[in-house]
Length: 386
Ligand code: FA5
Ligand code: MG
Image (cartoon, rainbow, N blue to C red; front, side):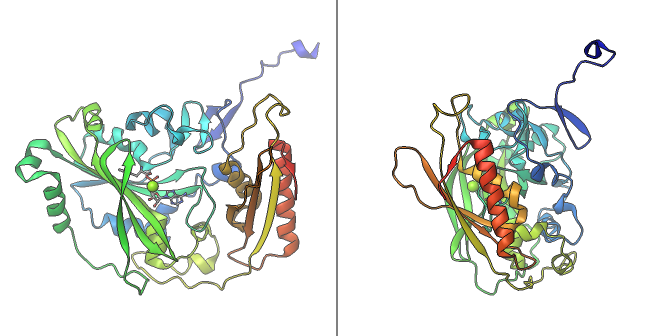
């Protein structure tokens, strides 16, 4: 009889983010590590290196030509993040292994380009800078984090005016020459080695990426290009033409301040936060490098016939996600390191544990590793080999 009492029928499952309820479905793949970081907004925290970097770049793109948008919600539609930019329906970036879905129609933006179309359409200025937190299921290492910050920049001109001035390249050159030129003295003493690499984005053509040599490798700083005509056309400004870029703010800040590990931006440790002052670029002083401790895990994936429900797929990014959820910022990097050739698919990962703030005990690393293995078995049905 209890069953038929005055109780309401069960309401559909929802998730609450930024004060709103969203229906969840089979696409939902948000973890608590991610949703709890939504309110941090590091690019708006006064005297945080990301905010200092943002303001420094903003000072090079002055109003009223450029308008700044720094508080757009990270929750966007699949249409805004992908369709409006011409991403084909089968683009890998759309998959649940790469993108955080709130439900099948709603994602955490994977890039600030998600706001390009709306901002062009609003027509309130010819240029804009959009700085924001963005979210991706991605590798774990010293220059990648699942939450990072991008700044989108764009500038439009009327096609005729542009032609009269010698075309897009000439106009861009003029623009650069007219920019304020106060010096930026980064923390690095070596001269920067940079290179432009031809790239592809569905919403620009031609496109490039800019890379800089850092800690022995080429580090990508930004993507950019001439905006595809479909964007201004769909935004009801078909007679305009222009450029856009999307830069990783962490990557710039790492170079400017000499910050060696992207996890540091999330630190609440005074020894980190108290080093920085609004408007100033200073060299980061490490609190000393604490020892690392690596642990390997090797496992067989379940054959699809034995897996419950038939198909179990496992993506490298699933491993990254498990490790971040279990170990948080105690994981420094994760490498997939061999592929022994056996009939069943076998995977091996090396997880490097290191705290940025203290010496990690071997016991602690062991229990994190144990927890990672438990999740692998319970959620993905793998057979751990060692
Ligand atoms: C984009 O996101 C494009 N929206 C950029 C763009 C804008 C192109 C406008 C053309 C016109 P990409 O995926 O390459 O491109 O990311 C841009 C930058 O974000 C990278 O160069 C890098 O600096 C930074 N970035 C990417 N992934 C991560 C990550 N996991 N952690 C930290 N920074 C990252
Ligand atoms: Mg790129």
